[in-house]
Length: 408
Image (cartoon, rainbow, N blue to C red; front, top):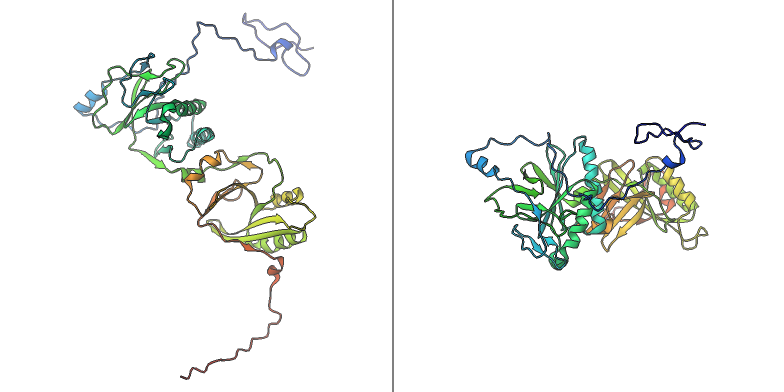
C-alpha cells in the first residue's frame, strides 16, 4: 500500500499509509483550520495600491504642484465619541462614520488583462445589485488606457440615519473582488471602516486641497491622488448590454417561451407549432446581425399537452442551429426582459431595470447574437401556419376595371 505523501513540519515524510485511491492518509486528507488566538489581529484593511504601468506618466510638476504633493495624509481609527474632522464625515445612529458619497477603486492587478478586469467589475456589480438598487446610486467610470475602474456611490439620503448599512453592504461586495471603498464628498475621500477601525477612519488635521481636479484617497497606509482626466463614464444601461448571461439551471417548464430564429426557419417552425397544438405570435426584428423573427409560444387553451410548453419541444428548439430560446425573466408595465433558457444573468434584474426606459424589450443572449435592445418594443402579430403557404390560386393576370375615365 502506498505511503502518505504529506510532508510534516519537521521536514520528514508522513509514515502513515495512504487511503486507497488517494495520495494521503486519513489524517491529512482534509485541510485543518487553526483558531486565531486573541493576540492575533485579523487585518481586513485594503493593501496599499500597486504601481500600475497602465497609468499615464505624471505631468511635469510645477513648483506649486510639487509643494502640494509633499503632503501625505494618513487615516487613523476614530475613537467613540470623537468628532471627525474629515469633510463630509458624520456618525449615524449606529455611531459609525458615514458620508454623502463613496468611491470604490477597482485597480487592475499585475496579472489582469482588460477582459479579466472587466470580469471583476461584473462580479462587483453583481454583488452590489443583490444588495441595493444600482440605478441612481452607482456610476461606473473606466480608464481609457488601462483597466482601472472607479465606481461613484451616491446612496439614497432618505434614510441617512442608518447610512452605514448601505456602506457595509458595499464594503462586503468590494472586499470580495479585492477593491477599496472610500467615503467622503467632492474630491476628498477616506478609507471606510474595517476590523482595525470598527467606527471608521478620520484624518486628524486634514485640510482639503484647494481647487484640485484629482480625487484624493486617504487610507491607513497614506494617500494617493487619482486623476480622472482619462476616465470615461459609462451608463448602467450600456454596461448591462455588454454583460452576457452565464449558464445556469432552469427549474421548471414555462407557460410562455420565446424563440429568436432566422427568417428561413419561420415556415418550418410555424407548421411545427401548429402540429403540436401551440399558439404563437411573431415579430420581425431588424438587428445588426440581420433580420430575425421572434416567436412568442404558448400551448393552446384546448391542447392536451397541458398549460406549459413540453420539455421535448424546448429541447428541440434549443438544439436547432442559430435558434435562441428565451424566457421572460422580468416584466413591468412597459418593459420586458427576456433571458436565454438555461442561463442566468450576473446582475440582479429587479435592481437594474430602472436603467432602461419604458416601452422597450431587452433580449439577454449568450449564443449566436449579442444582447439585443428593441426600442420601441416590437409589435407581435398572431400567427397561423397557413400564412406561410399563402399564394395566388392562378398565375393568370388580373383583369382590372377602370372606374373613372378621368373626365370631369
